[in-house]
Image (cartoon, rainbow, N blue to C red; front, side):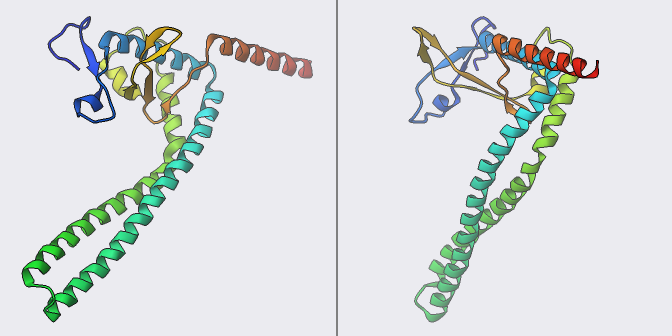
Length: 226
């Protein structure tokens, strides 16, 4: 984001473009637009969680279960690759040691190659430890959803978007490249909330259906107890 402009002028640049990655073109979005979108999203999320807590929790757990399966599968594949490479490095190290002893490999070359193998193996073992921790931490999804709901309950209304509120609720914001929809240029924005990721709050029409369903269930219960 620029530092020498007022809020009206300030904007966010795509981080990939700043890093000169080949698969991204220059695009940006004004800070005041992001500010307004985040504030609107937070207000909708608060209303959704407070009005339909059980449904929100169930949706998040269902989503987490699917994401968790994919993430764990990915990390297990990485784990297997690390373990295989560590074993390969043990074999390679033993081979160059034998070649050095037999005179096929000079001391200088042996020192260089063994240092390289040891450095790679150290890095892989550290990655292996982290992957194992990540896999174990996948079971914390339920706790994350519960913690998010409790945070929401502390707010009856958000009138202004403060740094404290942003830090409490927002993990990060992803601004995608512009798209043209119905002749209008838009910049898709995904807001990732702490512990739960993207939240797709219902539309006004969906809320109406949900409230009607709730009234229907309430009347049904009253008729049964009458």
